[in-house]
Image 1 (cartoon, one colour):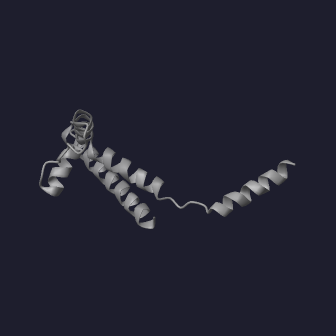
Image 2 (spheres, rainbow, N blue to C red):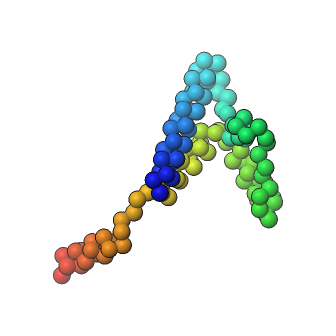
Image 3 (tube, rainbow, N blue to C red):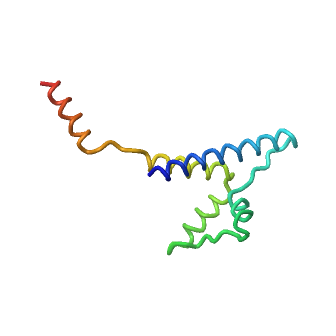
Length: 108
């Protein structure tokens, strides 16, 4: 769980750096040209991303193409936020039980 949170924060920082770099490039050139997720994937892996990963080819191809066309910082930031939310520390079950017992005794 801790590794997931750390990876989530690393992805959010990376998304912030990518967004900052795009902002600086937009101010310098006068035009906004974002780095698409598919372009970043190709730069990192050296191969074009494979999209057809499910039995519903039309749905996965449309969704995959749409996600790969988004700016890279939005997709990376969203994945980082999901990791932070999914890997957050949770209270133990007995703590919930104790809290509900305190609340029920206060109501009577």
